[in-house]
Amino acid sequence: QKEVEQDPGPLSVPEGAIVSLNCTYSNSAFQYFMWYRQYSRKGPELLMYTYSSGNKEDGRFTAQVDKSSKYISLFIRDSQPSDSATYLCAMSEGTGNQFYFGTGTSLTVIP
Amino acid sequence: NAGVTQTPKFRILKIGQSMTLQCTQDMNHNYMYWYRQDPGMGLKLIYYSVGAGITDKGEVPNGYNVSRSTTEDFPLRLELAAPSQTSVYFCASTKPETSTDTQYFGPGTRLTVL
Image (cartoon, rainbow over all chains, first blue to last red; front, side, top):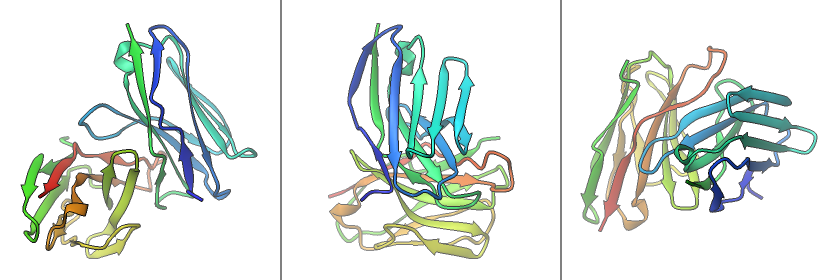
């Protein structure tokens, strides 16, 4: 069983739609949860960072963590063509510990 | 700050050749990482370092070597290149003492072994 599972998509939505991206994990020791955005032929860049369970909002982006279900989500409201990218979830047990990445979900927002 | 820089951007190697992928960060981060990214496979950790003079293997270290003589630099060495090492290589760094402990990535090196 992989440490982190992520649906690879691809996901295609019209501009303005709400997008939901998800990851599941098996290691209950994970405490730090991240979402990275990766544009084509670029390195991943941090989008959202959450510690433990709960929600975190930043503009059009909301990250949710449900540790009881070992499930994390990223919601994108009012999606824009510029949101077209691959989204990677990542998690770790603690500061300085190894990061475990999902395989990434490819998102296309159609104008 | 330039952040994390990687050279070269692209490289084609023949089977059996060797090369060094360069990685430099100017953020005074003590932790540095090398990943490879294959299509549909996510990021796999090759090697990491928690400080100058200290390195350790990640998930897929075979065929690679690293060194860390300074805080800023973390080169990745490929000896006897094989087609299975065709991939995109990313270097990343972090400073775990900060509150976010996120990894900052370089732009990547796209390597093809023929």
